[in-house]
Structure formats: structure tokens, C-alpha cells
Length: 264
Image 1 (cartoon, one colour):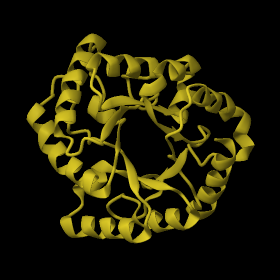
Image 2: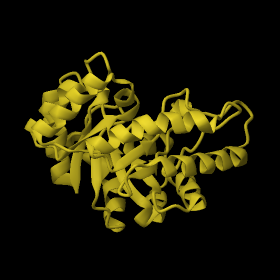
Image 3: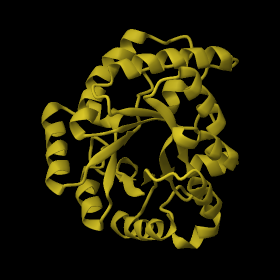
Image 4: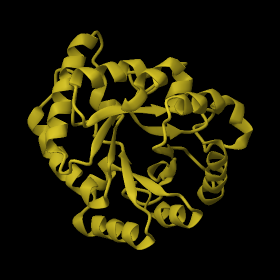
């Protein structure tokens, strides 16, 4: 299993990309980085080229992008505009392709948040429409979109693995699958059966210690063990990204990487 890290959680650059974490991730031995697509899409061309140059120079691929859509690009609710979705995706996806990203994470709480009283059935239909548009905009046949369950603390729609899996199956596109995020999974008290039900449609994993959303360590090994065991039962062997806050990125990331190598 490849182990990577999301850079934006500890970004210090003005663009919020986590520019300084790219070189550190390579030096620490991570196999890939996960960059935030919204922030990447908002960079001016010169700054984007600088980011692209660092990724290539350090030899650490950007195999995934989180933070797929900004809140202004609505997927559900009364303000959905398919032209706005296409306009954003054209710029953002082209940059993701240049970076070499294969996995695009559709968490994007603000883009999919439902108005009060909005019916899930209607939202699901809107999401399927949006997914077809987003897939049509993918510039590479190797790119995939994964639906991320978000806990109730962050969003009021699509909280569990089973809900995301059902939506992926209704969408019925080879480019749409699911993600399991331990932080949201634990807070939501989601079922391990959801991971097992996802099976071959589980294409990506995030992890953080839910207590403060910080880097995972050996100290919480017992808490993560059932989650990892469920991944092993479905023979998941793709990527797992640390998506966590830190007060000392270099030290904490090194500890997190060492723990994951021993656990997965």
C-alpha cells in the first residue's frame, strides 16, 4: 500500500497549498502527496508552474487531490448551475492532470451541503447529474472521482460509506468510486460493513487521529486496528493519505509514516 500525505492541512503559504510540505514529504519518504485542488486552481499561472516544478524536481508524485470543489460550485440545492460546474472543472482538472493526479476526492462540504428541509432523494439525483458532468470533464481516462463520507460536524449530507456506495452505484460510471476516511468514520460511528460492502469500489483512504485531527501514532493503534482489518479483508492495497493537523510537521509526519508502515 502506498502511503502519502495531504499538504494543505499544515500550509503556511498564502495560497494554502502546502508548498513547503512538498519537499519535506519527499525527504521523509512518503510515496506521494495529495494537493488541494481548489487552492491549486486558484493559483496564478506562474505560481502553479512553481508548484509543478517542485513536485517534478523532488520526484514525489501528486497521485491524489483533495478539496475538489469550492463552496460556490454547488452540486445540490436550489443554486446548482451546470455551466459553473463545467467552467470550474475545466481549469481545475487540467491542472490536476498536469500534476499527474489519478484520484480526485469529492468531500467538498460547502458544495454539497443541503438547505434545511431539502430531500435526500432530490439531492441524490442532483449529485448523479453533477457526477456525469464532472466525469465528462476529466482530461485523462486514468483519473477517478471518489465520494467521501463526511461526518455531521462538517456536512448534512452523505455521512456513511453505504450512502456514498449507493450513490456511486446509481451513478454507474467506471470513473466514480468511494473513499474511507478514518476521521469521519470514527466520529460518525460508521459501520465496518460499509467498507466491506464497498469492496472493489473503495479506491482511496484518509487517516487522522480524531482527537484533534492530528497525525496517527502507535499510541492509538488499538483504535485503528478494526479499520485496518476491514481494509485487509477486502484486500485493499492502493493508497492511504494522512490528512491531519500538526504543530511540528516534520516530526509528526515522520512518526505517522513510521506507524502506518508498521500497521498496513
